[in-house]
Image 1: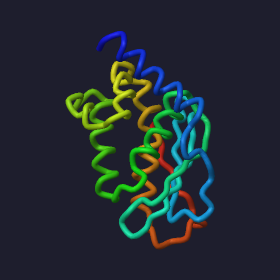
Image 2: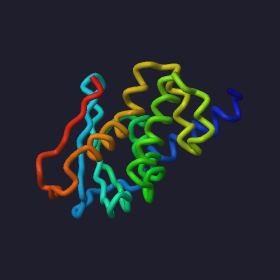
Image 3: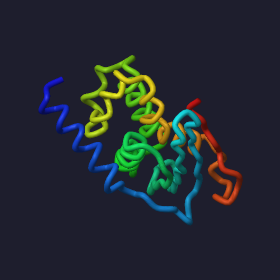
Image 4: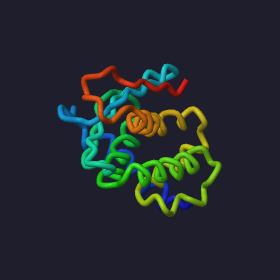
Length: 157
């Protein structure tokens, strides 16, 4: 990867860490889940508002490193307005890129490819994928249940 691309990707990650998009509690969410990484202490909650099969709104809150916060912010931008199937497909491609098992999918990810460099740092893969695993867990929950039901919790341990 060129130095210019590295710098661009680093600036995307820093921008989303400093000014995370969709960083708020969603009171009228259809479903939600928590994600925790006990190895580094990152933890966040993902809220999804579903309109039928479409994710009409998504938000997150929590604390963690720049990678986990930027990844959550980028994820919310990537999946808002997408169907469940489309969101899961993006997650599958993203996971393949950050784990280094399918780096060829990076171009299809748009700005999410900024996190592709974490594949070189195995401990950071869990930071980058935490929000995505929480999103996946939220989608698997009983979506007809009110948001006040117990929170699904995922761990990247």
